[in-house]
Image (cartoon, rainbow, N blue to C red; front, side, top):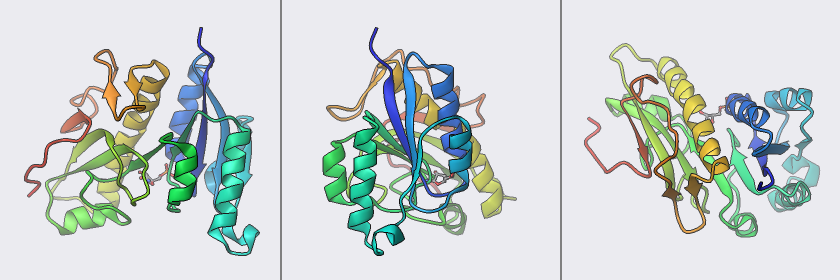
Length: 229
Ligand code: GRF
């Protein structure tokens, strides 16, 4: 049997997506091994990772004279020392440099709370409401040097309610993230998703049922552009 895939996680805060991914690693020890949780600032999620006996690191730019390159070099060394096969960003707030990403060779995955290419960056829920979109959602994508760019692995749409506030919408999107991000990691573990030659899904990949999950749609790869108004 193939050895477990070794997964490193980068976080900057709460770490609720990290928790769901670590739950999956714990449930599938033959396939998945969480080898590192690293943060670029003190992050609430670190203590929970440590409580699971997973190696944790805090590497802040301030530790390197305020210099991102020094911080990134230390991060890269930690990821390499952990022999991680994949790096999952789970609320990591810094943009990784092209130099770091070159070293990690297409092995970095992110989740973003919008239907990319809409609303790259911050405050996505507020911006989706302000724009009058009737569908919001999430995207899981491979990380390339552009912010919130890179090939789409999976997208899921969350319907917008008339009564939504940014927080109310955010909580439904986050619940969808908690289903979809583990589904991507599970597909990698099952070898039902290959990212070596772009995003290639195996027909047997198990994804959440959009209806049961309260989603409008869930799509492998990017959903075709459509009218969000
Ligand atoms: C999530 O909404 C994720 O999509 C975004 O940052 C947030 C992180 O939340 N990249 P958490 O730290 O996983 O709770």
